[in-house]
Amino acid sequence: KEERIVVLETENAFLHLKLAEYQGLAGRSTNEILQLYAAHDQQMKFQRSSVLTQLHGAIEKRLKQDLKSLHSFALELSKDFQRQSKTCLYQVVAAVQGIQLQNEAMQMFQIKAFDLEQSLQEVTERYKKEKQKRKALHNSLIELRGNIRVHCRIRPLLPFDDAAGHSQDRQINFSEKVAYAADDETVLVKSSRPGHASVNKTFQFERVYNDLESQDAVFADVSPLLTSLLDGYNVCIMAYGQTGSGKTHTMLGPQLEGNLALAIEEDSELGIIPRATQEVFRLISEKPPGSYWVEVSVVEVYNNEIFDLLAKDSCGKVFGIKRDVVTTREGKSDVPLLTHETVENASEFLHLVNKSLQLRVTHPTLVHAHSSRSHLVVTLTITTVFGDNFGTLWEDEQTSQRLNKEASFTFPQKMRDNKSTSSSRASSPVQLEATEKMKQVKTRLQLVDLAGSECVGMSGVTGAALRETSFINRSLSALADVLGAIAEQRAHVPYRNSKLTHLLQDSIGGDAKLLVMLCISPGQKYLTESMQSLGFGTRARQVQRGQVKKRNFPVLSKGK
Ligand code: ADP
Ligand code: MG
Image (cartoon, rainbow, N blue to C red; front, side):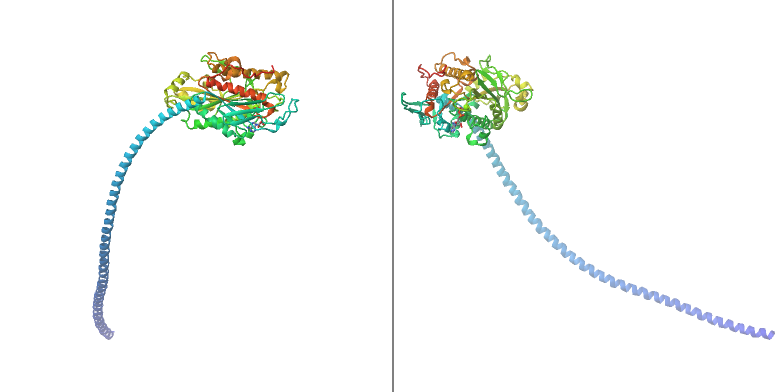
C-alpha cells in the first residue's frame, strides 16, 4: 500500500507537472489569440479607413465636378436672366410708350366725340326746324292741291259690258267706249248715237287714271294724304260712281264673295283701304314707340241707318247693330257705342274688315250681280299722345295751338273701362295712366266705298230696292249739298241732312283733306251715269277753285 501510495504520489506529481506545463501552454496560446485579435482588429480598421478615404476621394471628386457644372449652370442662368430681363425691360418701355400714344389718341377721340356730339345737337336742332318746315310745306302743298280734290279713274271695258241690259235699242253698240282719259288730267266723253244729241265734252280733274293704270299708281297719289293724317289732319277718301264702275275694286281690291282673301294673296291688286292702312302703320313705325295707336270701326249706311259691322253679340259673333250719329258739345260728329277695335298691324286690320264685309247688304240689280246698295265707311282713328315723356310731337306753333285746342286732357271712358276690347290690348293707354300731364289728339282717316250713284230707271228696280235707291240718291244729294255749301262758304253746311254726311262731317270741310275718287265705266251703255258722275266730280272740285257757278247740278234722283 505504502509503495503504491509513493507511485501514485509520483504519478500525481508528474501529472501536476504536466498540467502546469499545459497551463503554461494554454496561457501562451490565449495571449497569442489576443494578439491575433488585436492584429485582426487593427487590420480591419486599416482596411475600413482606406475604403473610406477612397470613397471620400470619389465623392469629393464627384462633388467638385457637380459644383463646377452647377457653377457654370448658375452662370449661364444668370446670363440668361440678364438677357431676358433686358428684353422684358425693352418690352415694358415699348408698352409704356404705346400706352402714352394710345392715351393721346384717346384724348383726340374724346375731343372728336365731343365735336361730333355738338354737331349732332346742331343737326338735330336743324332737323327739328326742317321737320317743321316740311310739315308746313307739305300742308301748303296739299292745300294748294286743294283740301278737296277729285281724281277720276276710268276702268277697262269688261266682258259684262257687252250685255244689252234692259234697253230695247238694238242700234246701240253697248261695248263701245265713250269715256277716255285724254291725258292725266282730262277726261274726254265722245259719243254720237243716232237719234241722240252727240256728246263731245272734256272734264278736268286733279288726276285722271286710264284703264291701264294700276292700283299702285292710284295709291301713289293717295299716300301724301296719309302724311297729313299723322301731321294732325282728318282725311277722307271716298269712291263715287255707279254700280260696276270699280269703286270697290279701287277702295278694297278684287272681291271674292264679300271677302278680301284674294286681294291679300295678290298684293299688287290691293286697293286703297288696305294700302292706306299699311302706310299708316309704316309711318307710325317711324315715330317714337307708344306715341300713336290705331283703332278701327267699320260701319255701313243703309237706308239712312248706321250699322256697326264690328259689334259682337254675347257669343262673340259679329252682327250688324244699328247705331246713331250725334254731334258732341265740341261740334264733332260721334257715334255713341260704336265698336272700335285696336289694331297693331295691317293684317289684323284686314282680318277685321274681311269679317265685316261678309255682313254687307247687297242686292242684285240688273247692272251688276254684286251691286252694293249701301255706303261702307271704314274709319281709322289715330290717337296721338304728346306730353313730357314723348316730347312735343307737333313742334310747329300753329299745329300745336290748333291741336291743343282739340286735345283732351282726360282719357275717354272707354280707356279706363277694362271691358273695352281696345284697352285690354293696347299697351299705350296703360302707360298713359302713369302720367297726368299727357295730352292726346285723335285724327281720323275715313275710307268710304259709296253706294252706286245710278238712277232708278237704269237699274230697273221697284219696291224695296226702289226705296233703297231713293235713300242712296238722297244721301248722295246731301253729299253734293255739303260740298256746295262749302264751296259757297255758307255759314251753315247741311251735314245733318243725311246720316252719311253727318258721319263724315269731321273729315269734309275745314282743314280736313277730302279726296273723291270718281269711278267711271267707259261703255256707251253707261253714258248717262258717267256724265252724272263727272258732273258731280266737277262741282266737288270747284269747291276749291272758289268759282262755283250756280248752274244746274246733274239730277241724282232722276227716277223719283
Ligand atoms: P262697284 O264697286 O263700283 O260696283 P266693282 O269694284 O265691283 O264696282 O267693279 C265691277 C267689276 O269691274 C269687278 O268685277 C271688278 O273686278 C272690275 N273692275 C273694276 N275696276 C277695274 C279695273 N281698274 N281693272 C280691272 N277690273 C276692274
Ligand atoms: Mg262695290
